[in-house]
Image (cartoon, rainbow, N blue to C red; front, top):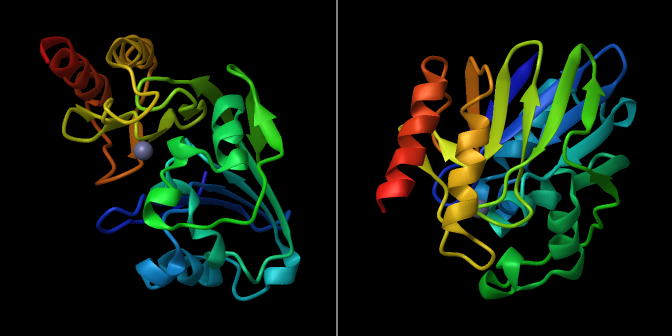
Length: 221
Ligand SMILES: [Zn+2]
């Protein structure tokens, strides 16, 4: 599995680009903030990945949850024609109705796309040589979902858990501390070698310990 990481700065989320050059397909996890605020970092990375052959590529964009710092960066994708947006059912509902859970109106953010591919908990997404299992992971928001790549034992965690033993905030609308604890407990049972979180650095060792530290912190809190 080839992963290009577009590191988000400030509020902006990290974005992950999985690519299959032979089939002309990209699978992008999270979009970050609008390119206007991020110097179009995602757009620049995509340009390199596809060698400017935009018309040869089909994209799927999976959104880990509905917060604006993960869903706003649509303007990075303008050169692509074929784009499908996907998410969990609840995240898709929030994004498609631009409701207050997205925080879009608070920051005067606008998006024009619709999420029309919905994944259920436990679904497997096959992409190139990867198998990504969708795991519903409420706590940070009700519609949060993570992707677990079974071959490389990689977890794309959105804002559920970060390197450094922290988990996502639970004080935004639909956040829930007890759901977060249950989610972290569930994720701590996976065999994970690589953690790719929605913010901050990646982690390539002791991921289970990291998740358990985050869970313990939540329990004390
Ligand atoms: Zn978030």
